[in-house]
Length: 308
Image (cartoon, rainbow, N blue to C red; front, side, top):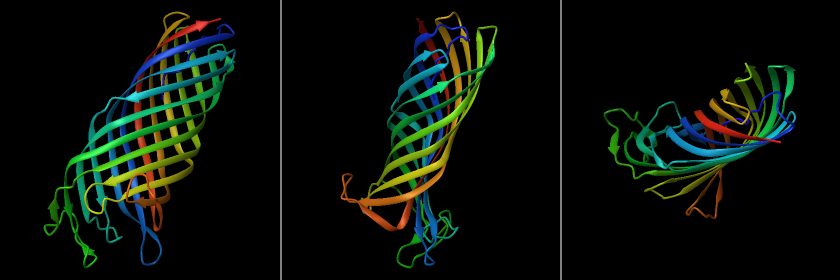
């Protein structure tokens, strides 16, 4: 997620570090709608796959450590830019038949994140440590899908349909979709750090999110113009894997290269609708919303450490 605050195993008791960093994120976030069928079972009626391909991120991290205990925080923001496509698929007959499909050019309108974590290093050997950690982070992203093309195979009068790619399906031009999402994740994990020649550090980490909160707002232009909001709670539904290499030029300056992958399994929960983005909101009695994430990130940072 961000460059680590590193220090030598023979470091002074107190240190403070500052790390500017640049990251590239690549992946997809998913948006889902489920609707009850005649038997009362929830079936997937809609899936929107929003590309983050790529996102360019600039930010910084600040850390403080005392002996084996360290605390650090980060903040970052994304460059507004074109970022892959958004694909919208519908199963309006509530069967396995995909009746509607559209693809749009996707743009990151705004995105930022911040968070922090605390860790404690257990030095198993002079060059190896195990560091349990816990933390929390917040992510905001606003996406805009425009310049799309679509195919409709569903007949709203007869409630029947054909596949979106059937010759009988009708092409049309969609007006666009806006999607904003806020995510709060708590994290608990462990990092395994190995130092070579007091210069090169390699670390592997794994984290599990005990609790995740996702709030999302969707607006399809045209049609009814309705706004949809999802409120989702996930328990042990997100994972993060990380690897990092750090080269220390001296006791004050180091360069880091890190890789991470965040996976959020599909979380489902309540969905609401309104005629404006400010409400009033009405909870749906026959539908649910959902969200997922699969994104990787590569980051390079330079750390300056002040020892006391």
